[in-house]
Length: 216
Image (cartoon, rainbow, N blue to C red; front, side, top):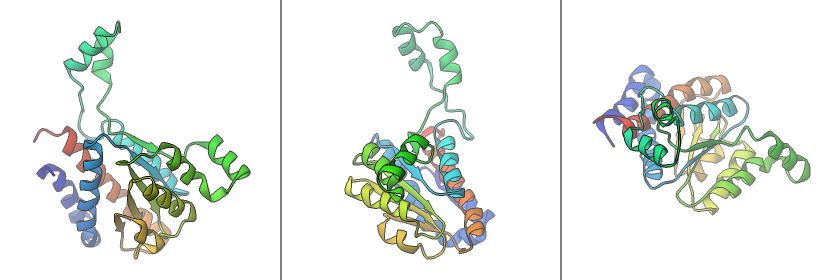
């Protein structure tokens, strides 16, 4: 991992000293995600309530520029021009490099239909079954570590040959045993766990952006 990427993890631990105990897991999660992206894999993210909002937030930071510009360059413009695009310069100027990530929380038609027709706690698992491939990663966010729909998604991810990263509260709950890496922040009260989750996933997004789009 680049030194600048690791510095993003170091920074969050300095700003939030209680997260120092999570440093090793944060680095491991970053390295796991970076390896997946390098190999052409993607990230699937899920969670409930505030963690659903966090899922969408994470995807937003990965699929466009977060801090760095992520310019695509003249090679991309030439490819557009060769494909007959009349506004290649505009697209090259405004589109940004993306790390492929999908939030599983926004598919309202699918999840409500599946809840009604099949099983309400399997909406995320069904999406992992359909979208997940070996080499992909599931990031399951559950403040308690015991959210049934996130746990089932992790089970399916493992069966599909995916890696699993958990983002939980202290102890990790049942989720910890299903993860390749579990970042269990030092809090148990839901809102306090969520207050730590934000800087944790911002640090991961910053580190990954530096790894793939930084100059070092």
